[in-house]
Figure 1 (cartoon, rainbow, N blue to C red):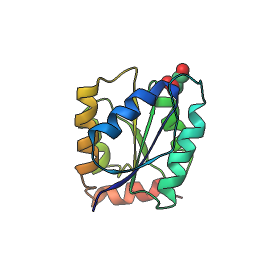
Figure 2: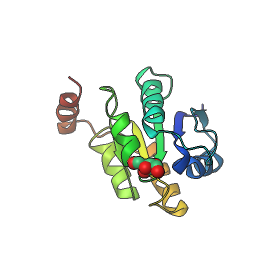
Figure 3: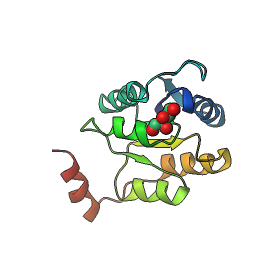
Figure 4: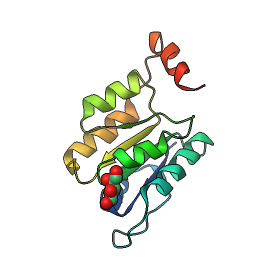
Length: 142
Ligand code: RB5
């Protein structure tokens, strides 16, 4: 069965969002934006991805804006979400292994498409290590 992944961006992340969807054959839940021309607000799209993952309507989320930072702040306002901005696959691996991150945040203006492919693949394929990390991750959800 295909992994179900929620994905959203603002206008500044729209092209990278489309590129990711075209690059991975997954069950995508696309929550917008609809184009790169209309200026929209990244918090609206971060909240949408966060809610979808928090409600178990998707196993993971991917959120894209210009830097990945603004939309990660929005995602992390949801207490069920552990969103991490990643600019390389080592960050993607470690945030899955140690933080059990459930939303990957990317910056279209910062990270090239080849690197993005490695990041997304690593993030989706890496398991949480549990053990000592479990206690710490539990402290993130009050
Ligand atoms: C939009 O211009 C830009 O500010 C936004 O995509 C993001 O980078 C914010 O963190």
